[in-house]
Image (cartoon, rainbow, N blue to C red; front, side, top):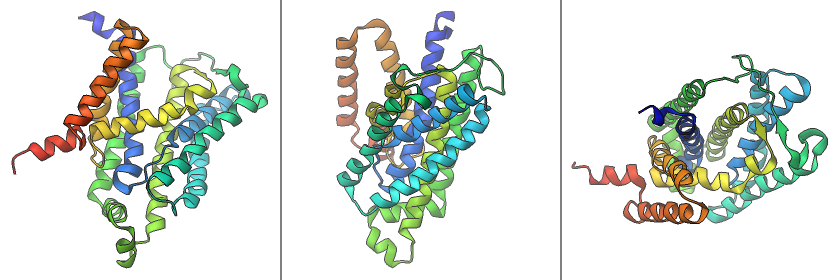
Length: 293
């Protein structure tokens, strides 16, 4: 039994909670607001890099770096999203895709600040003040708390006016505007909330992994992974991102341990495809549809 509580499986549990939190933050935009962004890895990477740079280069507490990261990401989210809101559907997604690509280029080339491709190694200094722990159990508790915080915010929004406004804008923006809903304001609010929560995820990742380089945090694969978990679990549902991460993240971790790259990707892809075909509304959405009324 103790084999299931070794560092490897604890790491899978930590990453399951972290991915669920990140996917939940994306679900606020895409699931409720219809803003299918592929730029989430930019917010994730900025949150991670600001924390790491502030701590390693200037000796600033990671907690202050977290606050700075939230302010920077929300500001950039407003500046970038505002110009993209006029786009619809795939055009909006493609426009947001440019942001993480640009940030990875900047991080690779601004070596005086980011150390470029060499990356940033964060010194191991355990303590609450540095948010670095000797035990993975402490990280698991923190990751679980982050996941539940995102879930609570999603539940609050799901039942409140903001959620209703977002769904109205998602379904028919012109009609929503004619009913007096300030569509741009509503979309900006949810974008800022999503960006802030994603930056918190970046902060957690930096203090957990203790090493950053541009591909590890700005990769488009991160944005795609974040989106897939919500789609598999159920878009526009509070539990969807959690269920998606609970299914796919441990599966990927276990496959990585027992299979090589080719077979792992084949099995993972088959499970992913089967889930999408059998549950086109996501696992949570499909279960709701099957539930007797």
